[in-house]
Image (cartoon, rainbow, N blue to C red; front, top):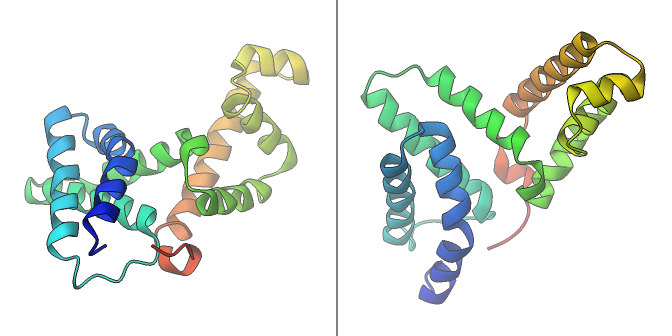
Length: 174
């Protein structure tokens, strides 16, 4: 990261994703941009001291931590932010790093078969609850329950796996 060109490429590659993530969690455009900017300033200022093995998880975790710090200083309930973070990961499957995708797929594989099928139809095939209910021959309420249960189970898995030890799971070198 000591190389200005690498830093600039990292900034260009991740600014938009990090800003969207930050905005999703804060719902404040200016605050979101300031937090991402602070993360990049900190990254540049500490470039000689940092040893980052996987830049994407590092940056997302840094943004998440900055948001928590901001809200902690403003006496905000951190669990609301945790939920928004997990919602973001679940809602943005397709734009997530491939190694995190592997983790998500391993979590999906742990879902009961019908629950997984309903979630995949809903999230990946963009089918409506009505369409899923009709195709599978089940009630709309059952579809809603299956989606809700699947998302809850994924959130729990993400809490346990994805962000507790990102360096263990993410081997891409920067």
